[in-house]
Amino acid sequence: MARNREGLVLLLDVGPSMQSLLPEVEKVCSMLVQKKLIYGKYDEVGVVVFGTEGTSNELTKEVGGYQNVTVLRDITAVDGYLVDILQRLPQGTVSGDYLDAIVVGMDMLIKKYQSTFKGKKRLCLVTNALCPVKYPCEGSKEDQVSTIAVQMTAHGMRMECIVVRGMLSRDADQTIMDENDCLLSLFTKKTSAKLVHVDSPTSLLGALKTRNISPVTIYRGDFELSPKMKIKVWVYKKTSEEKFPTLKKYSDRAPPTDRFATHEVKVDYEYKSMEDSSKVIPPEQRIKGYRYGPQVVPISSAVWDAVRFKPDKGVKLLGFTNASNILRHYYMKDVNIFIAEPGNTKATFAVSALARAMKEMNKVAILRCVWRQGLGSVVVGILTPNVSQKENIPDSFYFNVLPFAEDVREFQFPSFSNFPAAWQPHEQQQEAADNLVKMLDLAPSGKEEVLLPDFTPNIVLEVSCNYFLDANQRSFF
Image (tube, rainbow, N blue to C red):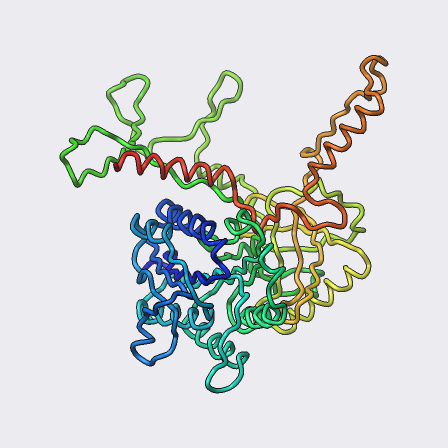
């Protein structure tokens, strides 16, 4: 199977404590599958619910245990029937054990794909984690989590744990909540897992990702501090723009009775001579022309290659400056992250030492970067230290592209004080305007940001996906 395909198992808590949240979980999960019909129609999804009165899973039949865990749908390609299942989740009557559900989901992935699947294998747990998990027959709960995490890593699985609480956690047992948070956070330390807490339907929609995009390095090589001092680093894109799915041209010229019609439109271009419109110019006889005033100047690809600027690949340090000298609005394009070469202990220590020294002195570094050999564009940017607060995550740097002088434009606006007195706002109007601006601040001082980027979906994409899906359903019926 292709590497960009995904096998996903949704592990959904439907116990009594989740009853008030089930409508939102149904809506978000069904939207997830609907978007997969657009983005990844070849992905495969399975659904497991826990907290049900009955039990239906293969592990119970084979080895016993794993009670109150029900497989609503085995791992199969996404389709409209899966959406119907997710829109009618059963309401459980007992407290569910999320560790049992995780093991059942892992068993489904292992039996489905074994070692032949080259794509991604993912578990997605949605729960409020308000109910205790059972004690294992041997060892502690922490030992059980460690054992599960080892098997997860061995089979190349990733897991997302989405804990939905909000107002529900006020009447819950704090001891149980703390224990569950500790167990779930242990997954993030032992294997490839991510734990997020959400407290609103919007955050839940943003936390449940349609697809996980694997990071790809844009540079692997030396970070040159001086001709004799270099650090091996890898550079990834930290953020990137989420784009619309590619839309293709559709033709309705095929007969309605043709069940095998693709309705695709194929576009071919022909270049013809201006002297003889019936003569087609073959590709090897074409040369690009560029307008220079009223004339068109032909420039061949060989000439372009000869005069094109071809800098050598590399990342070089130009110098250091105070962080206060680089204003936030100078940042351009996407953010990149510099990390030490994985497995290189010396590089890890060097990056950490440099990052902590820059952090202590409140400095940033100015770099000249050429990401690939022969790449015509050279970027200059700043390197900001990112000192990690977690033991298992090494220190790193953030890189932002800076503008060149010709990219910076300053606009001078006339002062409001030059307007006539009749146009000036009085004190009450000015106060109302100030309050309006303060209300629009999504990150007020001393408070948490209102719309966290990680948990806020792209509204334009959501509306567009819903439109296409509704149009598709109307045409189907």
